Length: 484
Image 1 (spheres, rainbow, N blue to C red):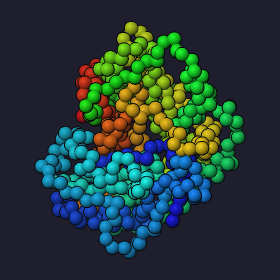
Image 2 (image 1 turned 180 degrees about the vertical axis):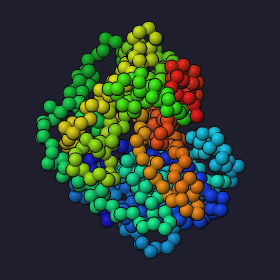
Image 3 (image 1 turned 30 degrees about the vertical axis):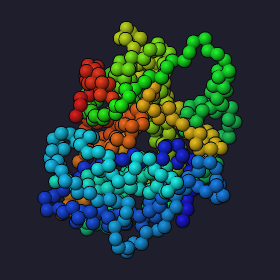
């Protein structure tokens, strides 16, 4: 069977964004017994959502509806009574002295294992050979199962991925009825088109605001024209040289924690007109760019260098009231606030923006992600001739841009594998950490992690070693965040 992916499915790059979920086990729980339960639950999940058993491919050029870059899912329904393990869920029991207690005491460091040790699929999906829609691995260490799971980003976004994980977990709970079957509309890749046809105002492209283009990774015609005109004019001064990174080095990742008290203080400092997420992202953007700028010492004037921040935003709440609440395809959009490096990382002479001012800048840009603009963005995305034209400014380790993906509101607390004979902690996730190896080779990124109820906020930042040292020495940053 074949399903053509929707226009928003082509916004994110085709990679696997992998989260590791730490599930403490009871002393009597065996690795193979636990793995068998996870396999059984996954098979039931594939029965509920058959396309999860498929692979993402490039659409053949002779297929109906083809355009360059168009992707599709090809799948076969899984046999509910089938035997044998599903290949999408790998098994690992490494020879390690690390125990769950060790990792818990150390704050579940993101570099305790390499990505390859915890996840079998590559970072970049191979769309020519076919990329599994879902890939997962159960790694067993003394005292715990580290379950990693991801969907190919072209098939589903973070909101969809956690919904799929919740369903998988619910199928592992022993002694209870199976969860309600999913609504067919949750997997319907045509539902966005139908809603858009009804609700778009049919505005000409020339009247669509730049923010609508930017949120789907496209350049508006006005900017294309300006770029072309500038290319024909010899500049009076050369453009700023790109900020270089140290050759032969790799970014390292570290997790930081903002206590409940510090999070409240940060919100109070930023004011009631911004959200808690705005405040956290402002703290990260300002502090990280300050460390990067100080370490790299750009030769150009900081006023001449613009930093673009790509903030991923779930478009579901603003898309339409008629959108199925459990929609599993992509609706992740980009909010792209900008600021000069001088205002973020310049000397503290009164011109550098406060964290509160940066948070307001982020909030002002986020206000452009509303229903009308999303409908316009869908229109330009739907009309693009080649999905390969979609570009996002964070996709480089050089320069002054970065990506912040906030998972703060993702309901990982609701994921429960059951308080059975295998899992401690009532079957709930004890900790969640991203796999950062693939990102660290290619991107400048920070991830705000899912927040537990009545707890503070954790986030993970990647920097080069000298930059990380500067961040740790930043007294303003340290007022709110501490390294885990």
